[in-house]
Amino acid sequence: MERPTLSSQLSTEQFRQYYYLKEELISFCQQEQLQATGNKQELNDRIAHYLTTGQKQTIHRKRKKSLRTNTITLEEPIEEDFVCSEIHRAFFKEHLGQQFSFNVAFQKWLKESAGKTYQEALNAYQEILLLKKKQPTIIGQQFEYNTYIRAFFADNPGSKLPEAIACWKYKKSLPGSNSYQPQDLEALKERRE
Image (cartoon, rainbow, N blue to C red; front, side, top):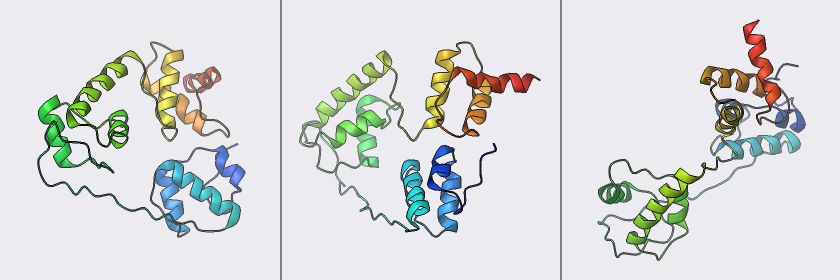
């Protein structure tokens, strides 16, 4: 069965069975005059709610803005409601090097560490990098493609990315889970024939 086009005629169950790109979700929201902002999981949930109830959910978020305009010192405490700003980025690059980036684990640490010092933040960043080298990064639920590709290569070492992508495209065209399974290699047999 071919993946159905995303429309208001789908049942919630049909919608949930298939994978849709974020761009498709946004386009559908705009077409149906639903709020089209948020991450992929939020868009999926909003569309499912709409398909089930016909109600248009609107989520209002307060945009956090960094009020910081001064320089940062090592002894200074991390502020409540931490927001990654260019001042913060410049501070961390100065102390950690130009390769610094706000990875997800470090952002989480910063948001949970109000009152700790920026020196402690520098130490935590180094620890997070060491942990990252020892264990694979946990991929968020909304990043199904990345999760699939990682699982494909874990099960098929030596394979090439185009093979993984072919299997992913095959998998997302099917109803149900988008998790990698060895039978997805059928897509490669079909390609060769």
